[in-house]
Image (cartoon, rainbow, N blue to C red):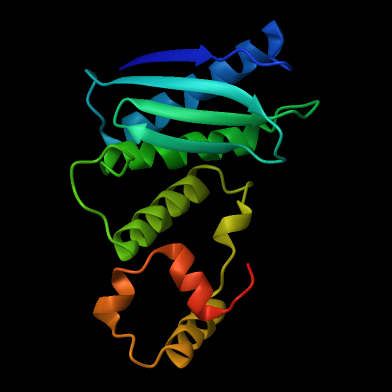
Length: 175
């Protein structure tokens, strides 16, 4: 497997030491995930890394060979958070769940894929629990009941085709 890691320039960039640290974390986590998930050795994955003004590491798998990673402007890079993020995104590569996918994806497909990627990341980095993975079964059941209550004509088939934004609006649940 070949990795290409590119750091985009920004007003508050990365030091040479931070770049080395980030590259090492990305390489180690990617190779470990690829081995575990049986990704082909011929795969090439391009990582684009940049700074941004949020307080968490964000990432998005755009295509099977392209992952965007945004790292906050903190004094110290959270190694466990970055590892967890890499495992999560490599899981999307393995399952072919990415932005430029040829297949049509429903909300339930997305929830399933996100759930599996979260579980994989939690298995590999159990010390880091992302805030978006903390929803309990009770919370989800309550949320789904509210959706149905506010729109009694909403069938399961119609629910699947709703956007996440529409579902949140229907449920009146504050996240």
